[in-house]
Amino acid sequence: MEKGTQEEQQKGPHRVPEENAFQKTGNEVQIYPRGFKITWGNDDRYWKKLEGDKKCAAELKQVSWLEVACSTKVESGKTYKVGFVVSLKPDAFGWKDVDVYVMAKVGKSGKYIYKKFQLDYPDKGEDEIRIPDKFNEPLKIKATSPEIHFGLYEVWNKKWKGGLIIKYAFIEETEPADPKNESSSS
Image 1 (tube, rainbow, N blue to C red):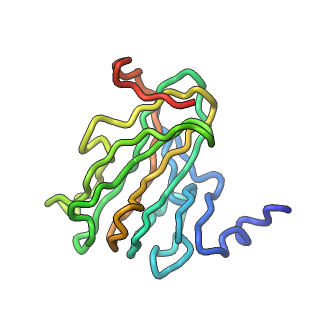
Image 2: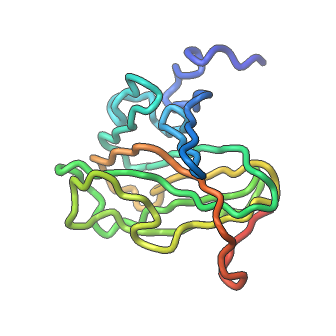
């Protein structure tokens, strides 16, 4: 079965990633929302449609199942940190006492590693929040194959939430973590 054009692929309820939604800035590769697989991302009851240039943000209206994922090629043997740059609208809701996860794995069959954090904080409306960096140590992963898959998830508590703006995901080569604490996947 052929995959079809990008436009044909986008007709279902879930948004599929577009190519060329990447930009390299220094050591960091930024992946814009057009490069994400977004569960329910084509349903305008849940997500605002991605319009404009490749750098347009993804705006969550309301979901009970947050699943935003992307992948990128990397150099095997190197360590990378991954995460997202987001903001919360002043009228954001449903984030109180909710654990949100940035998860990553190497290759499609790799084992996920993660960092969890909570987005409900008094600085709603802050222009940019790097997650999980703002709340924890960065999520570092050692590449044992040439592709890393990672995403932003909250799929467990079934609580409705909204008002999240996802500006981009990032992946950046970094120094390995303390060997006792570094996560790797194969």
